Image (cartoon, rainbow, N blue to C red; front, side, top):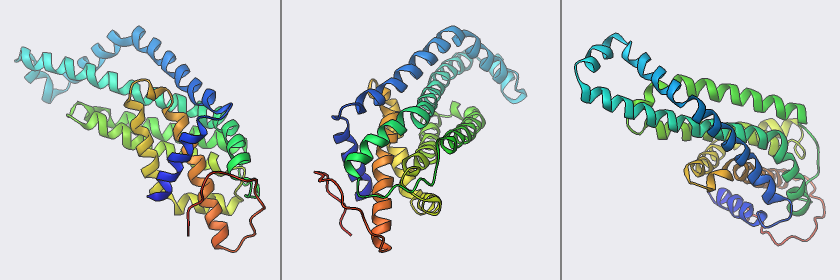
Length: 258
């Protein structure tokens, strides 16, 4: 847990550095504007379509036809579910932009300043990052669609997106954070060894997507947190295995004690 807290603290400190904050905010702004336009233009069509689909279910339709109150409650629940559905869509769009464009730029700046002692072994690549992001997005959207019918149950529409987004974060950003510094073996092994804390970190930062204004920064801040978490994990792993650490530039950020 202390590794996660340290990664979050380092990420907050990184926000003050030149060139970092802009890469934190533009993916969220772009994704929010894009999906807000889509929501406004398609709102009535989507809500009416979902209501008609539910009404067509044999075990629901008769009950709704016999109760105006039930039909009214259903419309309200559908509107809430549709509105909530746009939150993970905004997030995943911004996350793709972060993984493919913003994170590599932030990684270069952060690594040069805070992890200059780590040898760059380039076990990953930009093409690998793009492919990893596309696969993660496809799996995320598939799971999201399968879960939609359950969103009408109170609370499910909040819990499921956070869990799925936490998984998306660890799958997409775990690769990008290590691709320049880890070799192929380290890149695969560390993502397996650190899977549970990565899920905790990913789920924690996913909650930021539901905080107004802060949600604009949430995907990129999550990516930045994974950079700090995974590079510190790589540093600890190499130290533990007796790998020579390069002489770093002086840094004001503390390391985690063994």
